[in-house]
Image (tube, helix red, strand yellow):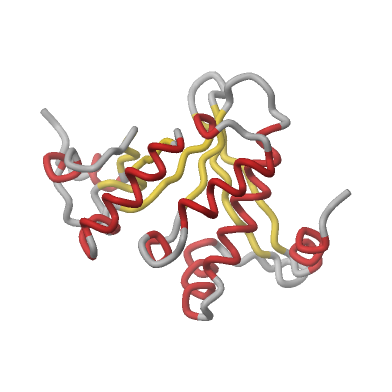
Amino acid sequence: MASQHEQGAAQRGVFLHYQLQGGRLEGAEALIRWRPGPGRLVPPDRLIPLAEDMGLIAAVSDWVLARACCDASGWGDDRYVSVNISPLEFCTTDLTQRVARVLASSGLPATRLELEITENVTFTHPQQALAVMQELRALGVRLTVDDFGTGYATLGYLKTFPFSGLKIDPALLERGTLAS
């Protein structure tokens, strides 16, 4: 049975779409979508800034994390779920405690959760970002840089942070910047 929070989100047209990751269904990335009315779909690049501006990003992230972890706990095996975390909330909220609560309530092992963050998170408050990353890694959560190449970080700089992986922005590859 869905919670009142979940039912409210569904009534407002908010839902998750899963994008498969890996060549043999290793996991999926949870992507929030909002359908405010028939035939309309607000993409995440407009929805997330709107939630940030309205001070709702933590509530939106909590819903996405809870829904994605509950869904993934039913997938079985070792498939992981990947969730994007807003740079705005990364260092300004009790993210580690919120993630730990969601993992405990969903029953999803921390090793099956991957949080994606942009490289910009490491610039604003690097020491605070590093501390949060170390706390999340201590839980067992994987951390990935999303869209590397859209900011100004170098691979050398990012090596100082405990990332598990790197998703490279396609435009960076098109420019040939990573060519040998």
